[in-house]
Length: 376
Image (cartoon, rainbow, N blue to C red; front, side):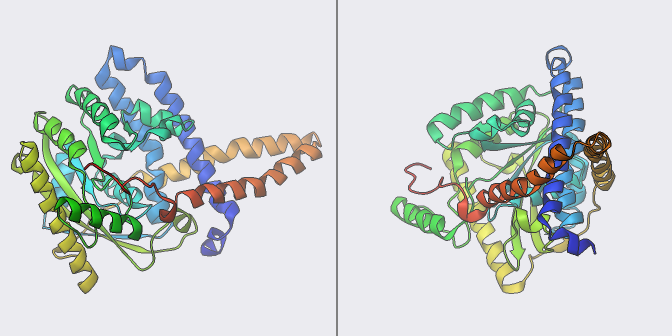
């Protein structure tokens, strides 16, 4: 019965409504708490952590609990435990970008160790203008980039100056490839690498060193920073999509995690670039191994889902439904049938708009960033 319901657009639209409702509620909390940033910064970031987690956790819930997605993590014994124990340290997590839901899978991993509320990332500049969602990311000190080295590097350096003085721990995630992997972008990446005598990868785009180098320098100069995590995603079967997850199309993603002490990463820029290229050679080998064996090397690691994930999903479902039921009751009681009919008529329109919005996020409609670039 549940699987049957998942196929209806109205159900998918309702899930999106719950997420938007939760985001609006928590963003209002962020706005109210914002003055504390200048009075008691640590208290503000503690509150911001909790508020963000309250609706961020709906993403892992949608992926694993609703969508039925299975995430299998591989790596050396104890790496997940180290990840969890280092929650009071600043961390940098580097991920490959193979599809549109990579960030969702990454959030599921981060949520399992209780760090989802403090996650930061680089995100398209246009997102900050998206009502509510963009504001929430702005209050959380996300880095908004325009995908141009000339304009983005000063923004990254400015953000790093903020992070250096952070009174609270954070976890920075980044996709060094800069954009999703597609055949077209891969061909462009190979041509660019060949022209510049740079490494050519079978399963990844050429990584961009400058932004990540700036972040690594900031982390290495921060006494509360210790670890660099490399994460590799590999999907089984068809590519995962946002619409597929909302429809409950179960799938599987294998994840390889590696821990690299920050002290082992070179601080000189040219040496760092060579180190990064070597890291992606190793990531390419990992992906090749997965294609041949259907899994990553190393142990299959276990980690429990976050304790509050399902409870908060239930909470937001109930709280967000009450205004709708209350409105309908008032309209029906007062026999406002025209308004009721109008609201019902909005449902298919909203469903169509929702489908178009999801359609734009699909990988084949991804950013053109990475094509015909002149600089790395």
